[in-house]
Image 1 (cartoon, rainbow, N blue to C red):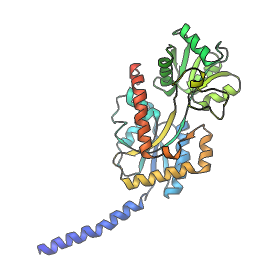
Image 2: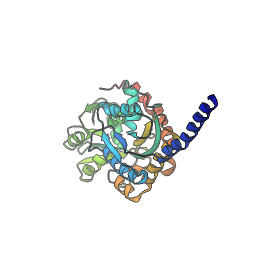
Image 3: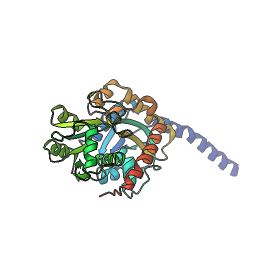
Image 4: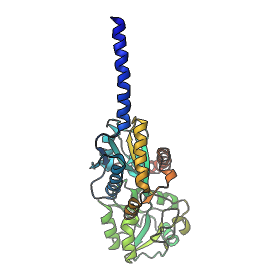
Amino acid sequence: MRVSFFAATIALLTSALPAAQVMAQAYPTRPITMIVPFPAGGPNDAIGRIIAESMRATLGQPVVMENVGGAAGSLGVGRVARAAPDGYTLILGNWGTHVVNGAIYKLPYDVRTDFAPIAALVSNPALIVARKALAAENLAELLAWLKANPDTATMGVPGVGSAPHIYGLFFERLSGTRVRFIPYRGGAQVIQDLVAGQIDLTITTPVVSLAPYRAGSIKAYAVTARQRLPSAPEVPTAEEAGLPGYTTHNWTGLWAPKGTPDDVMKKLHGAVVTALADPSVQSKLAGPGQDIFPPDQQTPAALAALQAAEIEKWWPIIKAANVTGQ
């Protein structure tokens, strides 16, 4: 009787193994949710939709976008941190959600350990721009004016802790200058007031600043990338213009909850890499001014290393300025 019981148990377990393996190999068997931790219509939303559509073709299941905004993206990121690690809930995070927020908010998750990196996707630098009537004609002249007039210049930023705000803090620290930060509700309002001459400066994405610069409504002193922008080759890098070491880029990556099985992670990573290699995807991402990471920087290890390096660079700057979430 006992022998029969054990034999039946072993037979049952043995028969279950192939089924479990088939289930793992079959992933995904239902739609995948990609959380975008910001409202619909923004640059992160656009990036997510472009990538999600291509991933659907590779994975054979819909990748459904869900916008969960609030608290600088931490609400949506927190939801993924609590999700089952089965590959069916992903987070489209960025430099702000997975670096900056860890320094300025008391989060119910750890940006460094509660997520499994899938791939780095895209990045974009910023432009140092000013109102048209500002006397300085180049970055060197701007720095000289700022040093001679501390706490005089106004720098518009779309909220405390936003990318332009953190970029501005880094600018002050590296250049030895001091400005007055003027918070706005969004980047569009910052550019509007810059064009109107209501503020002196901002450091923001080329997506919103190149058009008024091209129209002659504002000045562009430098790009914060290591190379000049192909779309504005006449604008020097900050390094070339007189501020060595001033580089920034707001990057986007894709993560799953920690503990997601390796085979699932490999399928997700493969789908992302396939998407980023697609010429139509590349063309669509170039529209919003995004630079796709090179293939050797699209690996999970590369995303983990990028995040770690950025935390090491930016957390001391943010904490030294005593920036806290509002």
